[in-house]
Length: 215
Image (cartoon, rainbow, N blue to C red):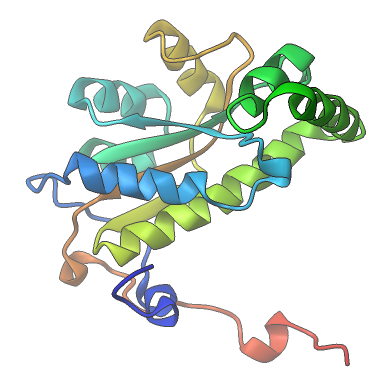
């Protein structure tokens, strides 16, 4: 985060309800937001999440019609970019071929082979791999949302979607990189008018009910 204080960004962030569809966001800003997600904590740095950024209006309309609950459809249509957080199934991800392809971007030679063998063993100990990927999607989306707020843009975390429908569209549009890819989470990004938002004040439980400090 550059010019703004992180605490202020957290306090001022709102979940956008109404987007200004007449204002476009520059591609540079969208890529900066996505890069913040790439730099989010990732167990052994393997990036279990991939982001599909949809800016094409026709495709957004298609997603909104069948892939999202009615209460979220208009946001998907009006926002500048819909982000689909996808991950592969365990059957595909837990292969030494996949690990080698990912890790070869960072390691070479004997170190690469050592890392592949070690991470393959570690990942095979994870019993709930889908849940493991979901936790990374939520963490990644948090970094994405904070960077959007930092750039003065709005974001909406959307859990009200239909994974099977979105997965089918991804395959139809040839956006999937393998047959196991599954949509875990979605977000909208775009310009908005703060005065058009019904929830400008965060409603949260009291601090005393949120934590317990053990000394």
